[in-house]
Length: 123
Image (tube, rainbow, N blue to C red):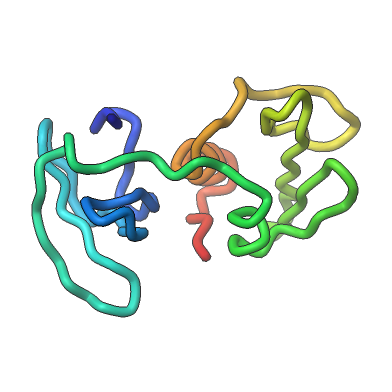
């Protein structure tokens, strides 16, 4: 299960049927979401949603470029770099210096990218 405190509007999560949904509104125990391209907005209890595991496939969908164990995306003057160590993803800024806690889920990466760049990371 996922906590409403870890989410922000625009995060991608799995809905009831394990399809990708985008968060549109957040309450303490419910989320308003929609499925991309379908625009079917609905409210459901938080217990029906799950985080999306962070994978190389998702990094590619987000427009990140793979350079060995580094994944890079340019946001204006900021070069956002993720590196993989021991099967975990970390924000490093390059050079292998870990600057974040390990990220296991897509929404964690989206939140970190927004906090650093002020831009949403979307597919």
